Amino acid sequence: MVKEVFEIPMAEAGPVGIERRGIDYVPAKERWAKPINLFWMWGGAIFNVEIMVYGAILMSFGLSFAQAVFIIAVGNLSYLLLGLTSLQGPEAGTTTFTINRASFGPNGSKLIAVFNWLTQVGFETEGLALVVIAGLALASKLGVHSSTTLKVVLILVAAAIQLLLPLLGHAAILKTLRWLFIPFLVLFIVFAALSIGKVNVHSVHHGANWQTMLEGLAFIISASGLGWTENGNDYSRYLKRDASAKATVGWVFLGTFIPSVALMVLGAAVATFVGTNSGSITGIAANFTPWFIWPYLIVAIVQLFAINSLDLYSSGVTLQALGLRITRWQAVILDTVICTALTAYAIFSSSFNTLLSEFILFIIVWVAPWTAVYLVDWLLRKKRYSAVDLQRGKSSLYYRQGGVHWPAIIAQILGMVAAMLTIDAYPHYVSLVSNATNGADFSVFAGFIVAAVTYWALAGRFVSAEAKLQPAEIDEAAISGI
Image (cartoon, helix red, strand yellow):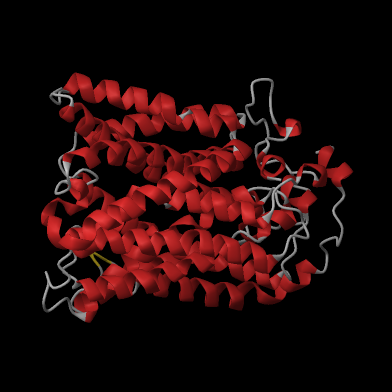
């Protein structure tokens, strides 16, 4: 059974196993995945040292351990949004930013796709930079001193390795992450066992005020479920159209919420005794026995490659959704080149952790409003799409006025303005509302609510009427002829 579930279908594989399919419709005969496959994929990706780093960074906000645990538990509930944004793929049979044409229009969607591409490349850069940092730590253990040459070599080697899984494609990624789930879990258990006797839950006695807690909550929501919503349907599109919605949301949520909470809490716990070094991949393990550093760093590198594969795969199909006339594998190579250059900048920068935390906070500005518009549009059209019109150009039902659906654009802009007016990204940017409330950060809630209400008000009747024009059945012959 496991072999059947995770075998790469020949219909989507090239002569050397490279997936040819890009953003085109996935026919019913090639829908090989099941909802539980998403549990293994997301679980294998989230059981990752990168998630543990987020928990450690959270403690740098000045929170007590109890406050951090509370924020981690609440913030990771946002993985429900990832579950909900994985339900459109089985119906539409295509990727997120092809489906996004229904709400924003084929041309309007391109603007949002640019934001998504920048976000995916940002996460890829973060992951690749952490791989290089871990590689430098291993080299140091071997007595090889850090140098410009060594950093450049590690960056290039890491980029070449990172290219492999995204090139092979969707099924290979799911299969690999399924295999890696158990060793990742074992590392976590060993790490937790070594940490128990060192944790100092009272390292911060008084904790932070409610304003700082809100800022920490915004950070965790962005780093967890909200930060992945734009990826969901890129992987659920291989589910059958009649796949259970409850099972899909449930397996996605369980595969993400449980490991994310466990790892972030562990990262926060380690930060209570590692201190200022806790925000780095090497600093987290600094106080452990030497024998553990080796397996920790080696497995951490593999983990980072695994989670980066999801970002690199999604950024590739997002480039295609932008209208670039390139194949999916060409898009992956292009993204890898760009990511490599940005990784070099991050590695040679002295403020990597600051760049990381601010990048994640600013994701809220566009992702929260977009998620709201995307989900409201899906509900308004009775959770159905015209798969053939998502693949068409000017003849598409969703083309409307010049290929732009202005209610969605207006809702997105107003949501982003609301987020910018309420975000706290000190020291580089503090919004008017945040400044007036001594550092409170309402951005994720303001952006989501304003965009949702605006879109519902402006597009509710029109989209509901448009939904009646969508065919109940999918004409795969018509889609294949596009």
